[in-house]
Amino acid sequence: MEFRRMYGRPDYFIRVAVADHAAYAAFLMGKLSPLPAVLRLGSHLTMKNIRP
Image (cartoon, rainbow, N blue to C red):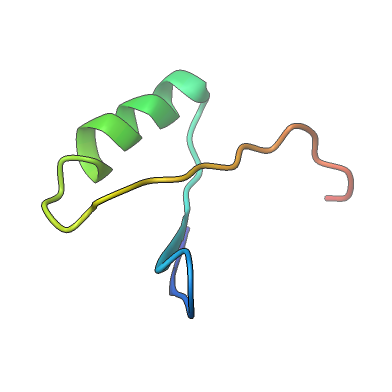
């Protein structure tokens, strides 16, 4: 949905939309982490949408 190159850390910001936590884990482990340029990953998951 969104892909940005950032100043400082993190180097890149990627926003994805997935069906659930299992789909997110599959995306992370199957698509993102195997890339040779990816050294580390950090995640933030939405707890609750306060304002649509």
